[in-house]
Length: 303
Image (cartoon, rainbow, N blue to C red; front, side):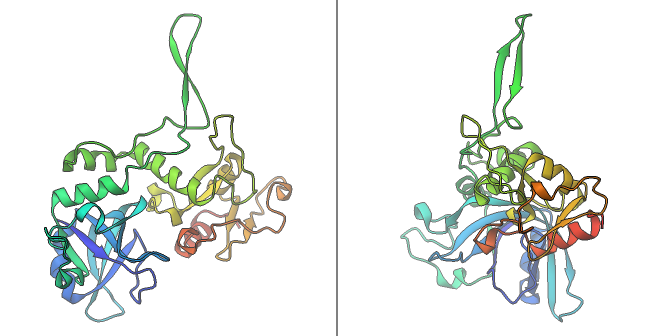
């Protein structure tokens, strides 16, 4: 069963987007059927009126909260941000029990923190949230070589992946959502937008003649190590810096101070921002999350 989970960024609950959802026992019977299936984040968005769908994740399992009685954690994986916040009343509404046929809102249903989603409703929300094309898609140019064979020459990166556009049926959407190359392309799209195509550690904003950026999207906690595709588990880095970051030669403090490993065999200070501070988005909802930064310092960074 698929469901909507209400989430407020400044909530008192111990939530981390895409990692865990904290909830009281009264919702346990509603969350349990979602284990192994997808949930949609729903709630307020800063500086916007209304309520919005903002991303999706899979519910892996549920465990009791050891420190708070009658509370539980839904452990999540497979999170990805929507390209845009989708207002719940858009195009006449997505949830039939919430926005009724005459356009009125079922306020009794609206206040429920966990709500069942029909397959078609889920598909429509995901279609609306993940169909924005990449403004700067990576490119492969076709070249005919001397043997009259068509080969491909890369631009700045991987083959572009399409948006989630097509028939609103559950199976094709699920297949797309689980494709790693498609998810990587979406993650890159979101991180590049958040950082305005600029490397956080160097300040470089290299753009080719077609407007495509050189900057890459680095996962702070890699997906294969339990990370997700939340923009706050990402940071925009130029190629060489990305290489050093992934190998623990560079890291970052919670206050965004850049850390250099003693294992560096060359002084790279001249490559980095003079104040040794990473340039992060002004919007705090897009900045690297302390949970992932702490993981990188503990598990990757070579002190």
